[in-house]
Image (cartoon, rainbow, N blue to C red; front, side, top):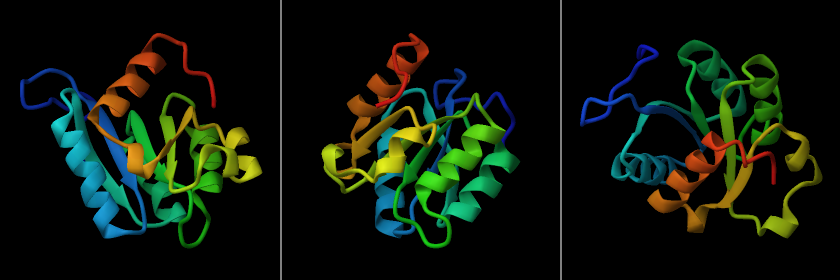
Length: 140
């Protein structure tokens, strides 16, 4: 388990990220985006909604990148549970849905944003975190 003051390669405090996706290729891609983005470090991975809830409790990440379609409880329900238990944790939903086709309960899950997996990149990650830090990100 990483400590609460995880440092990035430059030695500065890094945003601690949990990547949740049932597909190993996307977990690798998300980890690569985080490693290419200054100030972010992946501290854990999960393959299911239940695992995400457990990992969030165990490692207390700052940010969770959460797939919607997961085995067991889906990412929307996992997000709801995590946000209830850990309100300071920021959750961003990721999937292949167009924003207008998101499941109806996604917007009430507690996630702060939705990003299509094809659009996920370092600049998006930085923008999401910066906007969150400014208090301007309050749902999607």
